[in-house]
Length: 182
Image 1 (cartoon, rainbow, N blue to C red):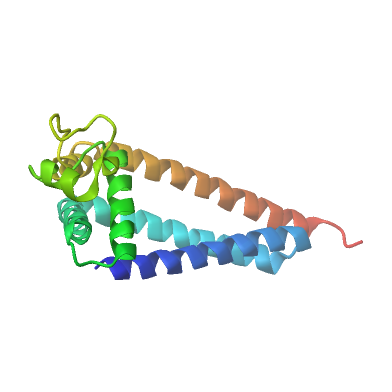
Image 2: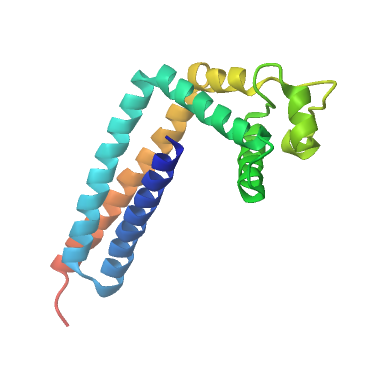
């Protein structure tokens, strides 16, 4: 599961870089073709974003379960003794990012084991082995059930920005078409 996500993120990043190139180069060269292609790509990306948002809202429980599964797999990779040092360091970095973002530490009630295996720098500053913070399973479930409106608000902000991008690219394309050739 996790390697597919990495490939998907790489492809999405490459597509976004290509779309950004179309917009910038089309504006610099004052090319209607490139700006029209940029607009078409933005419309397609906007439609994909709306579809993904609807799918994510309808399947928020399964998305939460998948994220918990991902967290558990990273957690296990960080805890295993026979893992190569690079993989263990990568798992520790991912765990630290998740812990700081969600303000949690460990899964279920395994916090003491986490501190003895990985050290105290993996968890947020507030958590210690004797005064644990919330476990990450609860925080992830809470994020996808109680805080779904925040995720929706962030998606709405991105959608509004994309609408403005589409408007400005079409205005620029039309003004290039209507300007006299010099």
